[in-house]
Image 1 (tube, rainbow, N blue to C red):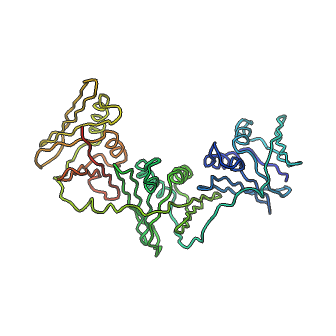
Image 2 (image 1 turned 90 degrees about the vertical axis):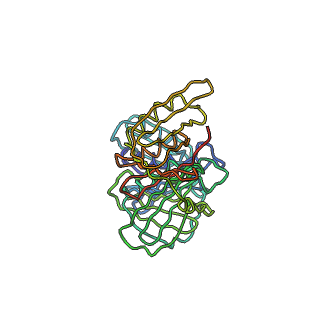
Length: 366
């Protein structure tokens, strides 16, 4: 294998691929990136067997071949070379010679034949969506995903397709974010899948061009997203997402309207003296007044009052302050609407007009 490539052409896809490669591997070859050169095309592949990224680059004047190269060493070499230089790669006796200007490196390799195959089932569902549309949906729900929860179905995002309706749901068991949107074309698909946490984070990172059209293919076991010259693939979580519809089927107090920034600022200040572990704050609501208060084991306390619009009876309820802040930060409107269940089991946070995005947070005891 022998070829010359410009640093800028190689660096970006290499950085994207290295992101999916774990630093600690069960198989040494998984720390490598697979290079395959054939028919004027260089294909780079990186995987941890759960998530895979493939990049395809057009090249001329090359000698075909395939090999695997230590991913992080190669990235460091390319990153530290001067901008816009050409890099020459040449494989000889299982060693890869890398040369650019007066810089020369000889890197160890492992055979391409030993690189594990990423198992993919037949993709029988397809739809197209703009990158910006999918990224917004992910951004509105990703922060709610669980991290290493024993209920492994919560360690990811539920994606529900019902013809043109797209719904994404993220939850860690204490809070839940729902984002709904509409796909431009009819898909004829009715399916729920769970994309694993790592897959969600890597996919969101790749969606940097909002105008780009994405081709999304998936089955019950895998999802594949074609992003320009990149192909992202992930294995899906083999489980059923819990039914959260009952949270809507209960009685609620009158909605509370509050200026988003006012609530955000007051919460941030009061939370300074909350319990560092639980971050609990109490909401005391009476007419046009919301009192936010907290205390901690050091017997420190804080409270602040802000104006609200509320027509119901007085009530008091406590929340994790960070959960409320996360929800409010994801609202696009200047006004936040909080609706508390009469049995104090949950609180809905949404925008006054748009029904695309809902955030549900469970209360806590102080």
